[in-house]
View (cartoon, rainbow, N blue to C red):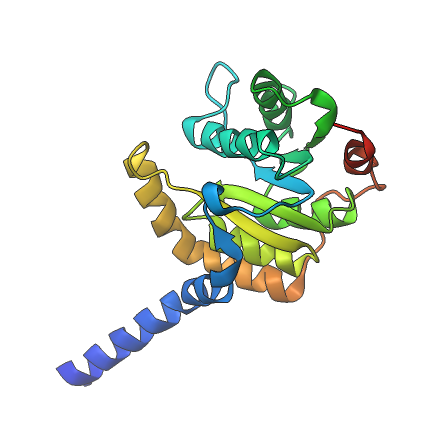
Length: 217
């Protein structure tokens, strides 16, 4: 039977293996992540969905992402926004709710393009590149999700700057849960980064982002 020391070594090794993908994502994207105040200019902001309330409006975490996009637009650090989320059923439409929120915040609707099949971070990133033609972007999400989002968008072929929201004081439990969830999610992210699987839906190229970027402000 293995002794106590052997079990301790095995448990330590298992812990290292378990945390390795998460550590890799954080290390690999360190110099690509920033906060809204220090964000540099990029042609497009990609805002990933984060759920809707029962009344169909963005959750607190999603609203904070959208607020960052509105701030970057108002300070001329982006020219268009790609909102990406779930619209797999007619009664649940993240992208349109996100577009309505940004319109209320002062961004012209023509500068906000919707991706209705952003069912995951990888699908949002790869569709942004392959369907909407995004080559350079600021991807906006909470800090706990930012390393994964930056790495996957980079792997999808986008020159990516990650702009993070510090949500701990506003949504403490959700933020802590988010950090915990990122550890197992990192395994899937590593697979997606290396294998680059096809998204559930691809389809023809869409001109929305190109048209938004060609429209004078």
